[in-house]
View 1 (tube, chains in turn cyan, green):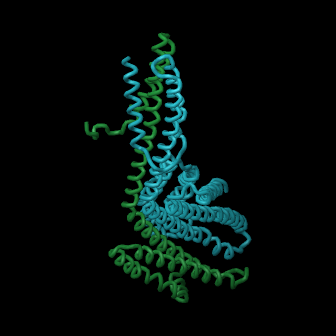
View 2 (cartoon, rainbow over the protein chains, first blue to last red):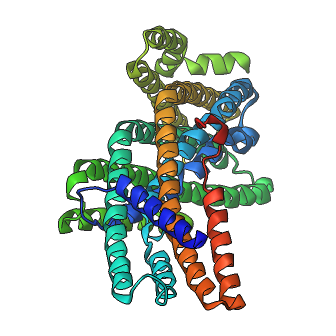
View 3 (cartoon, chains in turn red, cyan):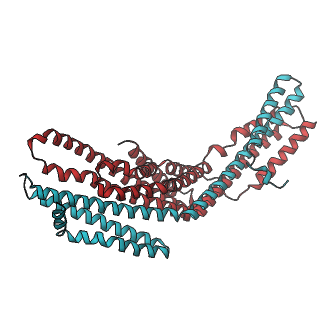
Length: 285
Length: 187
């Protein structure tokens, strides 16, 4: 009897809680929103290129003339001083996208298993005061209620986050794009410093007794030059990815009220697909 | 040798002048930076781009000088000049990279507010996710309680124990999903 009172209290509590989240919106599938947020959170490139930027001096140091070394060390200090800031911009954005993905996720909101539990509990009470048809009605109603309520709440939560976040998310993405461009430009100067010495020295070393040295230098030059070619592609992919994330989030913001429309879902799905392809391009060579 | 390279640097005077003008230009960009705004960042980057371009031109010039010998031995004096100019080129590149580093610092230091907003929104959303999870756990708890009521009616031990376990699990989940700072909540 004590138990049944607790059951009633709990049911009442549940109703109140669910009632508090009630919404006029119907269920909306946020699958594409989740996929987009997920792909945005996983997009690689920036973190690795930030590290590469930080370590510029280590790579260029052997190729630097004494006259440039002091400047190079000053630059190294400048880059290292703000590296953590570069990383924290990305961390904030990844955390945002991960949370958006969770918020738009299915697992948390699919209460059907729990509702079945509730139904089984009700069935166990067939011999008590609750009658079979009451039980069926309770279960069916709760299931319906929970789906509608949870997805409405979910939908509004996603809306709020994207609407309130877009301006600042765009600022952060724009900054990451600008920084990646600066990484690229710095890398260009590094590349030309490293390869430049061979450009100049190789044609000047024509004496036959330098042959072994010249051969080694040529091999080194070829290795370095293909290494930089591969890296160039990564800057390109990283920039493409960041631009896609910014565009995708902007489109998401613009279409918040028609997320269930087929063409909006297709568009978001395409952004997610593009981002996954860019990520694959970054993880392979 | 020192004189040689100095004299040889003159024909490349254009690049040399720009390099000399660099500190002045840098000051202009920085005083504009004092007024704030992204315009100054752009000015710094443009200046650095110019320095990089000068370095590229200088490199081309060096290469032209060397290629003029078409594989014949390059005279010692010309070699020394080429090396001195290459040093100048690398210094120009370091100056450009220094400006790129300055621009990057400006950019990243201006992001505090946006970063705080994004993190605040993330925290808010995490709280919402917690609430949804709580709805699930409470639904589960109700199921467990009902099961217990049913099991109690049968008077058999096993179903009662099973129902109690379920209730305990859901209670624990609800307990665990409480906000991290319960002290802040009004009692």
